[in-house]
Image (cartoon, helix red, strand yellow):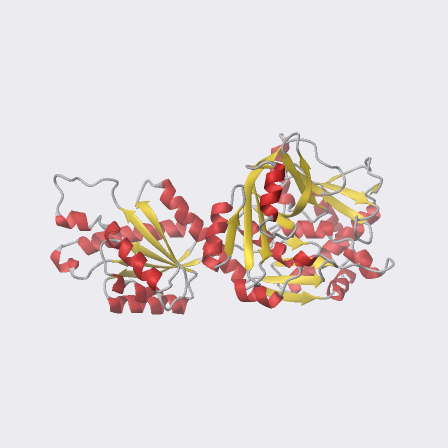
Length: 493
């Protein structure tokens, strides 16, 4: 069995804690009522094309709210009422044939949702010699798309056009699928609850943020938590629960022996039991407060009980992160949101920062002291005992892994001087090679720019020092999510 097969095996054993959220898509087709008595069967034919569009959208995992074929201003108003009642996330306007813009604007103006205009011609080429007017009208979707675009722009209605053919067009349908997935992520964000346990790491000014601002711009609810909320749940864990969680941990992680690092220490049975107990308490915290993510940090004092608790969160939070509840250390709320978005895109999203630049092999080493999204590791992750956590109080178990080789994306959420959130995204590749064995996640990442130029360009955008590291190239989907949410998005590299 290959290392990658082993990795897939342990990934499949990690239980997803959150159900998939499906976007609700409002769909309407457009045509001109004047045509129907003039060209027999035209309306029915176009309605058949619209049914094909709606079936495609369902296959992408969305819930469809169909207003049918809209062919008058009154019909457009009724479609808008339907979309408002159903609280859709995205409106799709399928341009079946020519229609006036007055039949389109009322369907979306009051809904206040972005619009995707589908300019999908049924055939790739018309038969010019034998063409009839009726046949042309069944294929003339491009005719009114500029008119609609002008009306939307002048009405301040956010929209995007996707042009292509109705069938056998991977580019067009791939783009539409990305819009649907982005709408699903937006819906999940709007309904998410992120726990804030403790406070930000003192002095990390880039991470300070206003929870109300986050709610205002993304709809995310921030639940402020005390360490006592966790402590009481850890205290209530039974021995049976501890042993079951310990068995789960041992099935997912390999155990590292003490290495060359002077702070490395053995993974003892006592440490495993304590980390398992804390992991059970974290599970209860997530369930009791209905959390979809968690950001946390607690400084501790002189080895007190809460210091011991705060130093033992990495293992449990790595399991939560891999199970769809992203956990961001050092109290970085914005990065927790970045991790949430990456996870809902199916990319993982691991808590990560810049470690070092390699000017010989032309890559950047990136990682963190946990937690990690162990489901995107290229091999079984490792538990390593640490006698201390650098820059923090306490000691305990930490997670070590390297994200699997292949295409990757780093995604950061930062904040501008005027209080607006801002997305930063860069695509690259995770390459094989040696990494640190110091109880941290760390990966060799290569971007389109060299290490120095990439760092200069990334930092020019005013990022936070954390990012969410995910697998696959996700820039296009993130840009679509940014468009849906009205957040600025900058591509680096």
